[in-house]
Amino acid sequence: MKFAALDEARDFLAANPDIDMIELFILDANGVPRGKLLHREELLAVYESGRPLPSTILGLTLNGDDVENSGLVWDVGDIDCRAYPLAGSLVRLPWRQIPTAAVQVSMHPQEGMPASIADPRHLLIKVIDSLKAEGYHPVMACELEFYLLDAKRDGNGRPQPALDADGGRPRSTQVYGLRELEQIEPFLADLYAACKLQGIPARTAISEYAPGQVEITLEHGDALQAMDQAVRYKRLVKAVAHKHGMQATFMAKPFDHLAGTGMHMHVSIADAAGRNLFASEDPAGTPLLRQAVGGMLASLLESLLLFCPNANSYRRFQANSYAPLAPTWGVDNRTVSLRVPGGPANSRHIEHRICGADANPYLAAAAILAGVHRGLREQLDPGDPVQGNGYAQATELLPTDWLTSLIALEQSAWARDALGREFLGVYLAVKRAEYRQFMAEVGEQDWRWYLTQA
Image 1 (cartoon, one colour):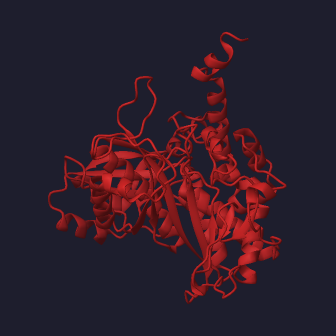
Image 2: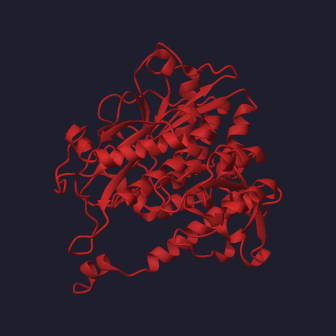
């Protein structure tokens, strides 16, 4: 584990004399940033000796509740655990009224115990290191979809697409519509400027498959760095949207009649010199690529909870929706779960299309790469690629409910070995607690279905 040097903070403060506040954050297992707001004069001490955070901070539910059987609450007396800054993460937040910067921290492997066992970034590092030990260097990138919503709900209290620049509300689906992007140009201009300021390689913007739905691609690179960028990018999108009077959501399925939001993960393996080991004139890639696909398919059910972590995540899985339904793969085919895109031979890679945009990028990447490693070690054959409509040809379907995925991860010997028993102990305790809370809540749907008919 490498942390930032003290000189990084000194240089930043010298170059930014107006900065008054520092937002210190760590990402929990649900992908929620949690932390503290510090004063300028407190920053150097964080770099010198870390910052204490309670052990419970990495064992909370999505709603911020303690999970008593996570092992991070009463068992350890909610002990302070020291977190340290990540190199390159100290950046300005240009949308804040008070001149403010942010710095991302991660638990120290020893000083951060016991919370460090639940740090999702640690898990990704562990999986990457196990691949590198065998000469495989993972390269990844994210495509994240999101909805831009009005900050105000409609007359029924439901979310609605944000107003466009002309004061209208988008109603129709205009996939790849250029006018739709033009209508949100002020938001995009500020978002791209913030990404540039923070060193996040945001590239192509696309109007997606629903009113108000947008996708922006991030450039590929070192797997850990790519996921660091994805984490910070999600925060940027939400913050810039708020500045423009909108709400950005990465919720997997915010509307029942519109497309869900996904996080497509692109992955390849390079050697120590950076050469793509999947590169091939064959559109289906090298034997190594096929083995990687075989491993991801073999571990798909056992790791599905990490790709689709919430009850709402499973509402994405609908036929003919561009969300995958089965453990399938294909070449330049968007009806399968694992797609090998077209393009030049040296760009050959796998597009993993299963994750919801609500997934934690660190955990999703760790599960994907653990599956890749399984395929390479066991030289797994994925079978022939699907041609044509993958929805119609599916013989085995993914589960479409939260509990089945939770149980599959809970019972997986492969996951305990690849991801670690200690991490899974905390993560599954959190997800079990969320499941109980969710199922115990009575709301509008229950009343509509059962109040008069039961």
